[in-house]
Amino acid sequence: MVKREPLRHVRIHGHDVSYRRLGEEHDQAVLLIHGLAGSSKTWDAVIGPVGERYDVIAPDLLGHGESAKPVGDYSLGAFASGLRDFLAMLEVDSVTIVGHSFGGGVAMQLAYQHPHLVDRLVLVGSGGLGREVSPLLRMLALPGAEYLMPLGMPKVVVDGATSVGRLLGRRNIRSAKLGEFWRAYSSLAGASNRQAFVKTMRGVIEPGGQTVNATDRLYLAARVPVMIVWGDHDGVIPVAHGVAAHEAIEHSRLEILDGIGHFPHVEAPERFVEVLLDFLATTEPGPDQATLREVMLANDERS
Image 1 (cartoon, rainbow, N blue to C red):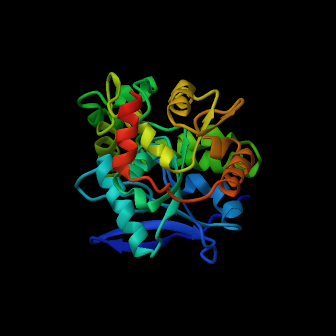
Image 2: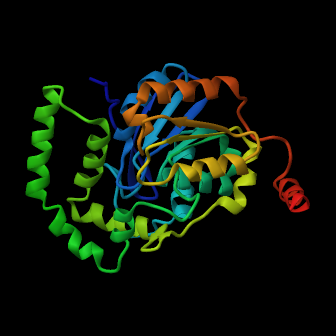
């Protein structure tokens, strides 16, 4: 049984933000950003081993997990600014950002808006790198889908199935991937969660696919060490997006995990932690000394 770090809370702009943290005594910090309908729980198997060497911080984004679910802005820019303020409240000057799925899009936005905060960038099955995304998410982006969602996830059914899942888990009958999908699905049984989920999703996905694409600015990421991690069996966002991003980001590192789906950190946590710790140990934190203007001009000259 993986030990789960206890939730902590910080008040930011009048809203409660929940997070888990381990390893505050270490100099370098690692920020773990979960995906759509996820929470800090998704990093349970990662926080412990990474926290032995680094100050590891895993927040519940607003609208997710145990954090507040206000009526407001759920855009990538708002999440990036929120994480900037979150780090300021924790008195953390800079971090290695690890973003999974939607969290990868948030990570890239944070790196773009606030580059001084970013030591390294790790994208895990990341959104924002191409049009394709799973049919289920495209279906949920259809107009009016939020009114049908309660019919597909009644709370009494969710609670009953969750109890069955716990019983099977106690008997060592479990699937890490299915368990993570169920955790995301069951989180939408509450009305406030669904509202936040729909607002967040529609900021990046439409019925035709993803609407946010960072590929034209990926060259900016080369200012810091970058690693891209993907499962070769990812059925949510195709691994081809990771390969293309690796080719676009000079000196980036690509790790494709065989037999793994959309949740490498859950399905194969030991392998994931191994590549993450190796990346952290073999790269130097922080951006290079070139100004943002110089990087942009150099890219235009190459084009």
